[in-house]
Image 1 (spheres, rainbow, N blue to C red):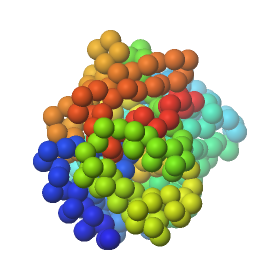
Image 2 (cartoon, rainbow, N blue to C red; image 1 turned 60 degrees about the vertical axis):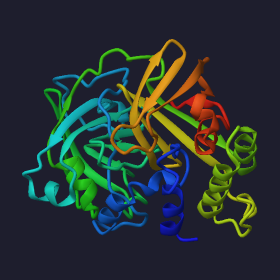
Image 3 (cartoon, helix red, strand yellow; image 1 turned 135 degrees about the horizontal axis):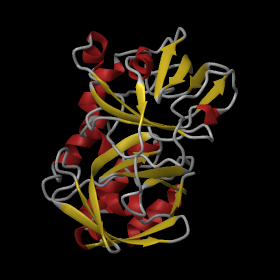
Length: 331
């Protein structure tokens, strides 16, 4: 079954049930935007570029008067930064990446980049390294860039400037190098959920979790066919027949926004609020879910567990993403 036929089949039911994050059909609603961006740069896997966000949690900010000594330490630039790419810039306008972006660089060499809601970004892991006055990153490798990119960096008066050193990937160089990045303090976490949480599980585990849910048989069959397509199974009745590699899902809570990545591909970008231990999720723009879903949250020592409530508990796509395995905080 082709992506188009599968999407059409699922969309016939979309008026009465949400298509939860964590499944291939979750990306079909954004495929048109991503197809435009596949033609930009040297794409290996289709993309559009960056997904939404504002507040990023960090433990330290760069100093305002750091000298540009030669270093080989990621902590030299660790911190949170923000910039706005102007749509009047010809390259920004052509690549459709105008808007506000937030960048976090950690002392461990992790790079987190978030941007406007209608700009797609792959999920973690994305990394960077420092060697002298050069910064190298694998941002967008496999999602529009064929190889890593290297930039000359400078940090003066709380402003990080990245200048491309022959980066062959235009998407990345426009995103990182068009404007300087101003250091900012994201403030205290909005709630205990803030940050990245990841779950890993096997195909048999997600099938078992979905089959335990009180999903209508018709929706269960739609989920099964979607995963047969997603995982390339040779058996139309068994998503796991092709012995697929382990699956993963990452939840990113930032401000009041929730982004969900299936592996590294963004599958959901919506709003949330936490009232006690009840999480309410909404998606007013793209309508991946209709109305709202509620989930009871259990927060342990860097571990999240979820119990679906109401309509969410009958949606097999939602069940697969949220209840298959516990989520562990990504460091």
